[in-house]
Image 1 (tube, rainbow, N blue to C red):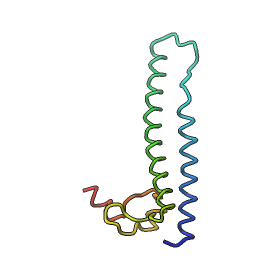
Image 2 (cartoon, rainbow, N blue to C red):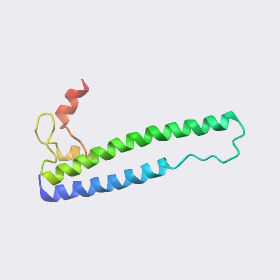
Image 3 (cartoon, one colour):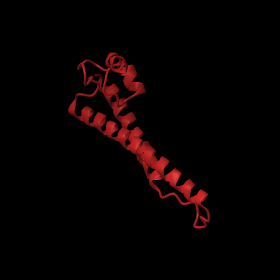
Image 4 (cartoon, rainbow, N blue to C red):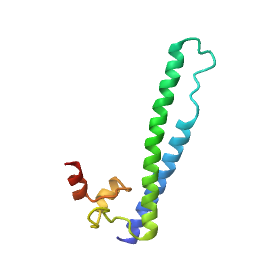
Length: 112
């Protein structure tokens, strides 16, 4: 892969990782709807929001790990190689999904 393209993807991945870290930090803050929870409805709302945030945090952490994996692949010189068929992952696909682990053809096969 062209070195300029690699640098572009590395910068994009670093920006995505920074955004993910900020989102995780924001969602990890305790839910506080005030100390005046005087009904079960308010306590339920807090519990529901906490649960929703925990699910989003887990999803964001999984994506952050995929971004870290992609950055490691860049460092090892194997970025853009499909983990399934070992062919090239199209730069157009990496532009859309820079942490992609599979080429377009393998992704299509896995969806069936």
